[in-house]
Image (cartoon, rainbow, N blue to C red):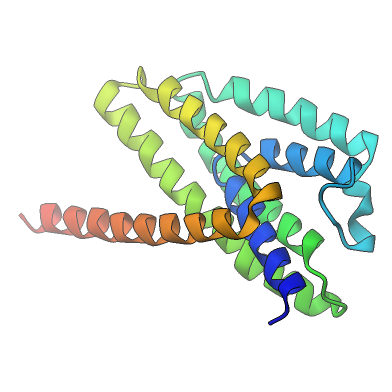
Length: 193
């Protein structure tokens, strides 16, 4: 595998997984980075760096971040943002892949990018549900702040250290899968008793 494709896949994983924390914040970071020539995009995705895209993603980011600070509205948003995160992750991964075959590019974008976004979003949903249950929603703004910082931080760091961030997300995904497996096993054991 050549270095260009490896870097592009790592860049796509980092940006896609970041959408699991917040959908529009990584899209805005990618849009601004593309506008200033920091993020290399495939020709059919050059629109991502346009002013209309920056304004749209910026507005959506402000609304999304603000809405996540309202307890229980944040839980409702998770049902909406989960499929949006998969779509955003797919789009971001597809936009950076230097592959000529469009079908292969979109399939890889969905499987890798959408999968990375869905995995991180699953962990985010479970942490918010746990916070809602344990703190009656009063701890959710702390969870939301952590997710905002993670979304912004990992999106920006991915632009400069894509391989390191991709490896970090892969390790985080393994941890999330392990925790979800334990959580499901625990629920089954409680039902049996």
